Amino acid sequence: MPATTAFQFDNTYARELQGFHAPWKPASVPTPQLLYFNRDLADELGLDGALLDSPEGAAVLGGNVLPEGAEPIAQVYAGHQFGNFSRQLGDGRALLLGEVVDRLGRRRDIAFKGSGATPFSRGGDGKAAVGPMLREVLIGEGMHALGIPTTRALAVTATGEQVRRERLLPGAVLTRVAASHLRVGTFEFFSSRQELERVRQLADYAIARHDPDLVGTPERFLALLRRVAGRQSALIAQWMNVGFIHGVMNTDNMTISGETIDYGPCAFMEAYDPQAVFSSIDKNGRYAYGNQPLIARWNLARLAEALLPLMVEDDSDEAVEAAVAQATEVIDAVPGLYQAALLQGQRVKLGLTTEDDALDAGLADRWLTLLHTQGVDFTLGWRRLAEAAEGDDAPLLDLVKDPEALQAWLGAWRERCAREDGGVPSASVARAARLRRTNPWVIPRNHLVEEALAAATEGDLAPFKRLLDAVRRPFDAESTAQARFAEPAPSEVTACYQTFCGT
Ligand code: AMP
Ligand code: MG
Image 1 (cartoon, rainbow, N blue to C red):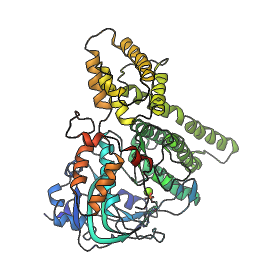
Image 2 (cartoon, protein in one colour):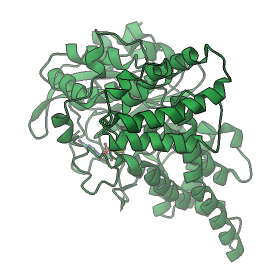
Image 3 (spheres, helix red, strand yellow):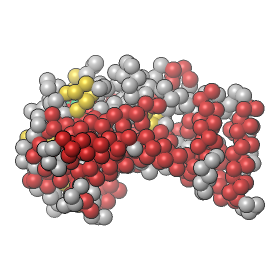
């Protein structure tokens, strides 16, 4: 069986949404070679991994040979970028090859990124470099291992071609798997052109795909908005609880599915600081760590505007007012949804299994204040609660400048835990185990990601493979062999660390 038959495509987007995309072909590349192939993901997708993980597969995954059943298209979208509306964006260097239904019955997009210029490239070359595509692998797999909804990398194929950035870099094509590539910006594209019927078609498509229980229901467009608001609130809360900074939360990078998408200038925070921002293009800190919940709400308000005409029952002023009021209510509920999801996550991260509405939010807030004022590494600070639960505060004390402030907080935490435990002696052992399952030891640390990508760019994939292996097991027992993956960067490095969108 040839690799070209590896996918069982069923392409609803191409078929049902005429006028929402341009049929296009991937560019041919000189010498496609697989740098990375995700066998487990291939298996999950019901693909024959062995067939694709081969030179023949590389020809498919590099774009030279179209797999059977693929109908490659460039999707159109618009988007608010750093707050400014761009009415014409779209896949400028990506192509949706098609959709497959995975082993669990979930429809997943198979798409290329870096497969050459399209009608939406706006002067860009449509290409991608090895470093940024392997970055999608490292961060995406790290997020997945942390239990955070994300698009995933099936493959990265070196093209054998050089791409021109600040300097010449080896080129690559990413094969990305997503629940869909529907974005807030996809809706904005048609709504900004007053193409109301297309907005409706798109919304019904999104509902069928992501919220099938709403199909055909009378208030489904409002319900869709509510669902997306719920998914995004939960997602951002998860980001915040692992210190993830997306870096470019434009509306074209916000999915309807609730998956994290587009790992460009993203970074994990080290010392806890709500104002942390790493992206070199984010001059005003719009997408700083602490702003992410606000930006999510702002983006959801753009989705609400796009969907609003669909919610209006007739032309009367009353109907318009009613729709506006309902959509506004959904958007106004976002901070509450987010706070609830955040607090729920924080409780788990504090090792709590019960809810105390009078105490928990304050306990979590004071903990974060402590991490902030003491300059504690966000990941290790949480992780060291496991030893503290076992009665050993020393590892946590090692991370702070002011032991008294920490002791005071630990006292309050222990009281809260004791109330929950009701004197059961084994409770602290169980708590420590839970804490180690929820607070990662290893995250994709920025300096290690950079180190791995720099080596890969020079042709040495060993550091990338080692780091990938580590970030896929974030909660593993701590070992001296893996210790370097858990250590924060030297503070001099973090102080001037910047991520670039030059992808
Ligand atoms: P991103 O920042 O990756 O989310 O991309 C924003 C927009 O710029 C999208 O419409 C991309 O397709 C487009 N884009 C980014 N890089 C390139 C490139 N090298 N060539 C063409 N279009 C690009
Ligand atoms: Mg994007």
